[in-house]
Length: 228
Image (cartoon, rainbow, N blue to C red; front, side, top):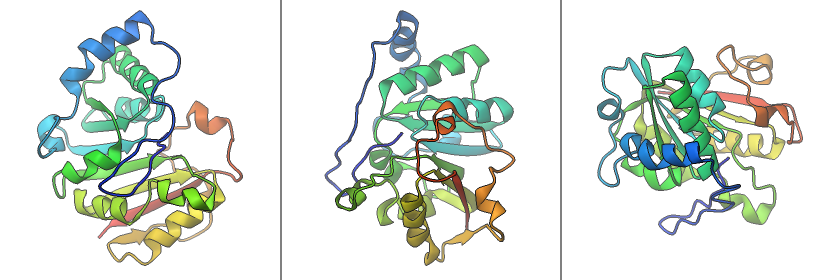
């Protein structure tokens, strides 16, 4: 889950950065594998350069425990996936999935995606997932929500024309917030033509344990846009 504040340039990461201590295996993956598949520390980020030979390139922001990310990467071995997550335990779990399933098409970064998005190359991604981000219910905390004009601008810049964006939430106020942010943005085309298009999980969706907990105040809403 992404728990972040969106004012630029002064970023502040909200929420825990780590939970329980990592196992020896997880710590080994963090120490020895993560550096080799991490995003570059500076300069432009080119997904095609990081994951060469792939038919398409996908970014998942705030991948939590990595279940969705690993599941998608396992299904689509010719697609390259980049996952960004601030929570160390989530990164460690995703590394474990990567090792167990042999997911050479996955790169991971531990950090705040808002700091990284501006460095992605223009028109470099075919798809972006932002699933169940922290809704920050209180009005005074709304500026901490990941979806803001600045991130919307980044999405528009780094997605290829025809690229897809999916945002999912089980909090009604956050769904409303996202619709307000995107509905008047001519760079994105809303894909729903009937209620079931956003009420029913898309055929390619992978349900995670977090989603199964039903912690929100509504059934999951799946919002799909296409970049013009």
